[in-house]
Length: 193
Image (cartoon, rainbow, N blue to C red):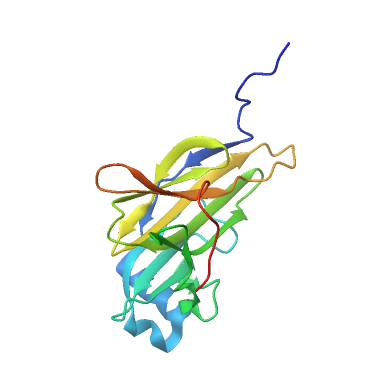
């Protein structure tokens, strides 16, 4: 008997729902992430993820008056950055046309068979919508967008009885007419400046 044409995915995106982080917590996250430079940045996105790992439960994206972004992962009211210095995320453009700039992204274990996927970036004015797909699943989930930045989080379940790895995330960008103008799966990989 032939195999079905589309085998079932070895994972399930169980939630992409985010909740806002309150202003007091955002101030604490930026202060612990950026130190004395925190006052130079204004948060444009501050959201809690649908699931938490041992050291991450959300993300704050902030920008300064020069248009330099920072990405601080949160755990409660504390923040940290995967990049050192935190502004190292700037200038990492991907893909033809340089419509999207990716910051830090990662997948972390959030319990047996449960993972947190989190990432962020910013985009040019040509981009009206950013979505995320996972692995070979064609479903796309909307990113949170504000202030020229985007962030995404997802809770992803895999079979806890197997060594199934969580899927990679792929960024998609669309113009105001709904035309896909960037697809990370089919366009070139990173090109650092």
